[in-house]
Image 1 (tube, rainbow, N blue to C red):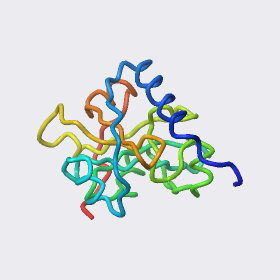
Image 2 (cartoon, rainbow, N blue to C red; image 1 turned 45 degrees about the horizontal axis):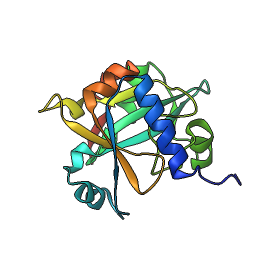
Image 3 (cartoon, helix red, strand yellow; image 1 turned 120 degrees about the vertical axis):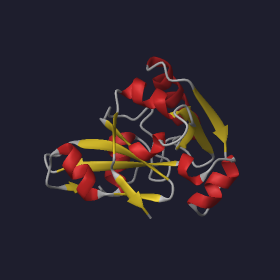
Amino acid sequence: MTESPEAPNEALTRISLDASRRNIPIEIVPRAAASSLREAAANLGIAEHRLLKTLVLKRSNGTYLFALIPGGRSLSWPKLRSVLGVNKLSLPHGDTAFEVTGYRPGTITPLGALTPLPLFIDATVFQGEQQAMVALGSGDRLHAVLVAAQDLVSGFDATVADISVPE
């Protein structure tokens, strides 16, 4: 794909507008570039399990969904297939994820995505503090979005399910 990534300020505007529309309080914070999840979490001053990876997944019928997985955990394909009642899921190429969301891999967030998609959040996000803040991508590599996980559930009518395993 020859399109360039969206300008960060446009992405941040989209995220802010979508969060407001969904009544999700967010904070967009600057973050330093990081070479690992551990480094990214440290740069934000949060525990690794509070930094959520946003995955775009494709069902065999051609529809997509978002899955939020905490740092230190990996998506469990069998668990998510069971939750969805499907036999096949795939991780689309980065260019396809960009077309669906408007965000490049590594910056993807459900907030402000070009295509509204169902959101599935791993249940381990809610172990311990129910109102804990989590960090998500923001559409650019120099910012993160801080948000209460429960607000994501409410704002997206998200499904919370056991969909991950420890890394």
